[in-house]
Length: 106
Image (cartoon, rainbow, N blue to C red; front, side, top):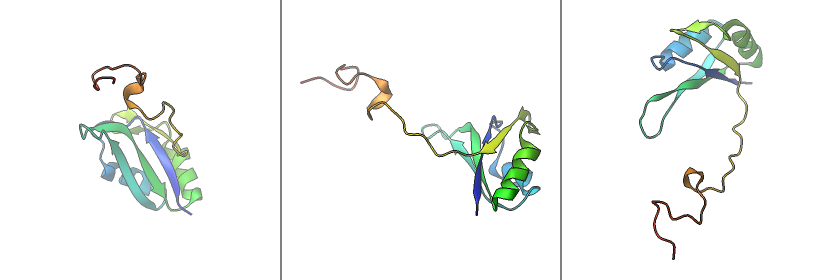
């Protein structure tokens, strides 16, 4: 079964191919994704690598966590499910009663 790994503290110059190559030495990489900012398209400094099995994922964590990729010391661990965000679904954490720049209260 595939296991997804979180890879943090990546250089903004790191590519998905760089991730693929680094992790392929420790098993089958089924997917390598870098996270980018939706608004700017710039890298966010972290990504995810999906390994072919939990054993391969564990080997990759042991081998790569704390090592240097590019010019940064990376963090590698098993990805956890995204946590629910609080805040009620309104923008910017503002109080719903405030008018702010979102328009008038009626």
